Length: 367
Image 1 (tube, rainbow, N blue to C red):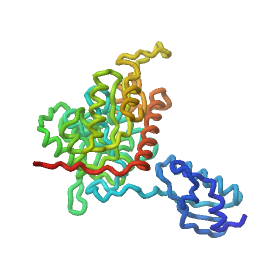
Image 2 (image 1 turned 60 degrees about the vertical axis):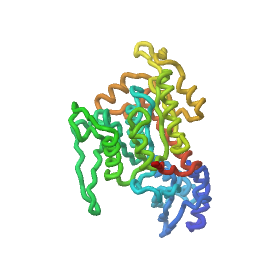
Image 3 (image 1 turned 120 degrees about the horizontal axis):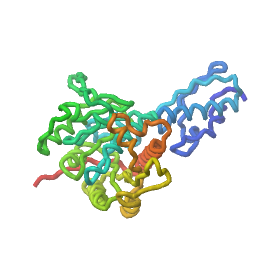
Image 4 (image 1 turned 90 degrees about the vertical axis):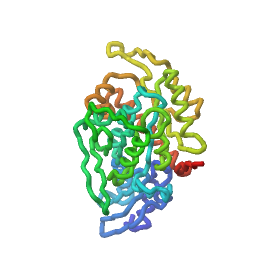
C-alpha cells in the first residue's frame, strides 16, 4: 500500500481511543500528517495523556502501520492530551489543573489520609501529574506519609507574585501545614485562620500543570469544607469510611453535605477502609473486626460507587509510618488492591467528566 495521508488514516481506522471507545480517525484525533520517504510523522490526541496510556497508543499505532505498509515504515508519533471539555471560566486559580478532588470523612480515625496518600502515589505511579494539599490543618500527616518530616518549601516570584513551591515525593507535589510548624507544635487556630491557610495553599501554590489535585480534608463538615466549596470548583469528592456503624452514620452526613442543593459536588465514590483483618499465619481467614460490608450497604443505599474495600494490613500502617505508601510495594496483595482502587477512581472521574456539568462555586448570601 502506498504511503499517503489517505492510506495512513485508513490504516489507523481500527485503532480505538480506549476511553472514548471509538476509532481515533472517526474522532478526528489524528492531525499534522507529514510524509518524507518511508518516514511519517503525525499528532494524535488522547483523553488520557499518562505515560502508560501513551505507550499503549504508540504500540497500537505502530502495529497498524506495520500491518498496512510493512516493517520499513518509520513513524514519529506525537501524543498529546485532549483539551478539557469542561469550561473553567469561573476558576480564578488552578486553571492548569484537570481534576480537583476532595477526600473526606465524616469522622476521624477511618484512614482518610492513608487512602489519600495511596491514591496520590498510585496515580503518580501510573504516569499522571499529581498534586496533594494536606488540608487537615490541626492534624497534618502527609509529611510523615511521604517521608518529608523535615522538608521546607521554598518560595519563588512569578509575574510579581510570591508563590510557594510544593515539595515533591514519589512524583507527587505536596503542600501541608506540617511543613511550616515543628512536628510537636500544636496548631491552636480559630476556623477563620484555618480557612486562610487552606486558601493560601490552593491559591499561592506553584502547582503548574496537574492531572489531579487531591485535598485531604479534616473530618466533619465545618469551616474548611465550606471554604473549599466557596473558593474551588471541585470535580468531585471521595468519602472514606470503615464498616463500623458509627463511621457509616458520619459518612452519610459527609455525602449529604456534598449533595446539598446549595453545594452540589458530585460524589466520585466511597472507600471502605479496614474492611477485614487477615493474620499472616492464617492467610485464608478474614476477621471483620469493625463489621462486615457496611460500606457496600451504604454505597447501595446512597447510590454511590464503592471504589474499593481495603483490608486492615500491617504493611499499610508501616508504609505510612516510614513514608512509603503501600501502593508502591512490588506486587503484593495490598498493592494490587490499591492499584485496583486507583483504577476505579480514574474510571469514575472520567465518567463524571463525560456525563455531569461542571461544579459551580457555592455562593454564600448574608442577610
